[in-house]
Length: 338
Image (cartoon, rainbow, N blue to C red; front, side, top):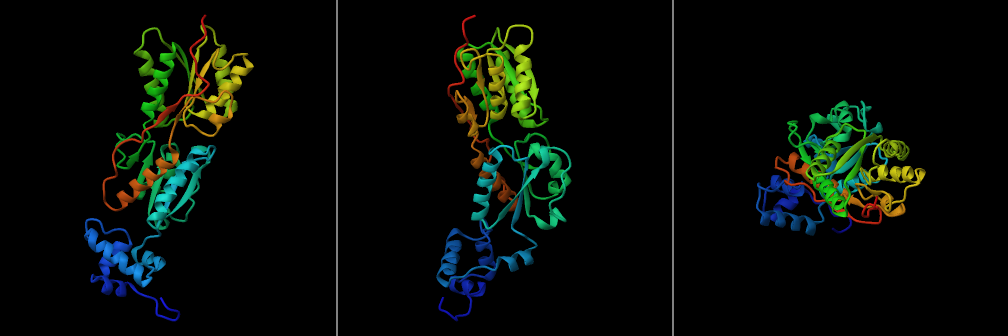
């Protein structure tokens, strides 16, 4: 567009493409699917490119009552996992002209202060971790288009769900340790009442119960290294045969277990095998490096945002859980002969 030329309008684009202004709005607002043909959509985009047309998003949003803003509600940002979820969600959102506001619930529990004067007025939709469900209710985010992460799809809440295949991840851990010959297990469980942690406990118990001669103890701890160290040290010091493998609900708990083992004079993996779940940078920083389940945090965020866009557009989100993978490192080995 030459200097001093009038700024092209949506009417100009419509005339150049031979369509209505409504069709231009649908295509450039990425709401054309099922309403105009793919060929028409491409013709509109080409006309906009040739004319140098840029839609006035602020004016359009004011007309439509839309802020093009999504809220991502997560527990307190104590690991990089939810930072990865945010990165993935923001990447997809940007491609569709949305921004993402990240709202960590203090400690992941309890009522949280509303970050907006009115969440419904300021937002177009919400993506929330089930671990921050109480904060979600406090900010009235459950009254907006909603996608829940790590949430029971059978809960009957009416919200769309996006999940990692945590059940399969625990299955991979159990089969790996059983194949190494372990039969005495300690489950170091996160002390958080959340569906995802219930799934981990249930799947581990079910897998081990199917193998004769196995024994499973459970110790709970807050997701912190000090809490995990104290809980693991107490469990490994309890009367009776000591477990030879510890299955931890996440990598931070596993790091705490390393500290407990060191205090008790136990070597990893010679005396005690340890597994985690997440595959944080921490998993490769400790020695020996941690056998853990890799969760693709950025893909999780991408799928969550794609699901929310589908909900807002009246479509069904893509089905299926996100695959996870066991990464075997130096923290697991066959149990020592007794």
